[in-house]
Length: 161
Image (cartoon, rainbow, N blue to C red):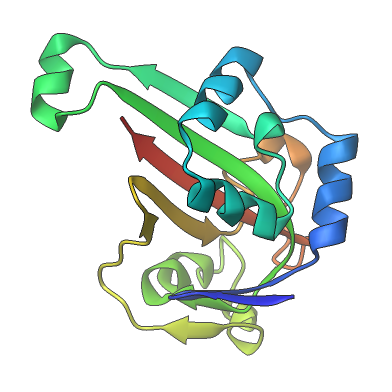
């Protein structure tokens, strides 16, 4: 299923993603995932469901800020969520292309496989949940997803409450 999350366009296999989460659990702490699930709005939950992602099984790095840190950010807690979606990126940002096209990363050959969207700044959010898409290699190094066409898209969500 092709989805547009400007600037990213993705081709997602929802059923395969659902099966991935039946077979795999990337969760680091069940209590944190449950807490994250409880604070999501229906629209935010639908974002994950539309992709086939089981939010109880995603990887979440949770940070509770001290009073000193909180005053600067005006938020007390940060959920840094990484998840995998079966499929491929159809478009990436120009900033991502600069990194990915490096010969030490994937090389210029990826330019034949994705559209490049010229963007210097972008904020994609559903309420207080910011999201983006990228290649999954850095977020999931243990899964050996080093090739460009690895069959997965890396999803990233940052939520501050």
